[in-house]
Length: 148
Image 1 (tube, helix red, strand yellow):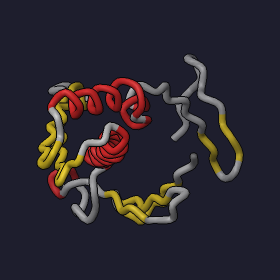
Image 2: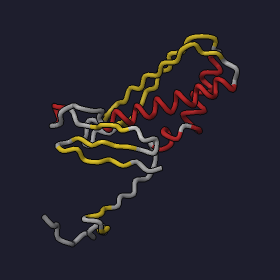
Image 3: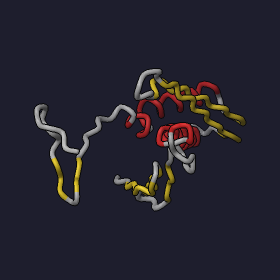
């Protein structure tokens, strides 16, 4: 899967993935942006609740459960120290309708621990590559001077 983000000026980027739907990202006014789009960090939580919701709904259907409504709230707890990463995520599922508590818990646990690719991706290794004017540039090794 490949997602591309294009700089829109200032602190804004517009991203698009294989689905073709654009997503505008920006920083908050307090952090120097214009607040014209979702923050990248909130999109992590958006992706997680979407992934969990889709997966849990599919599992409940297979379990012959009949929810009338499902709302998922993700509360990300951020570290005080830079980079202020999300260190813990509380997912709260508000379910209405004919769903056994043992079944919703089973579906939530299966998704969060085994099936949700977004949850699993939060543990992914990040391997950066840098290109300048079309040519890949290697990461400088320790003693090389910094270019301006």
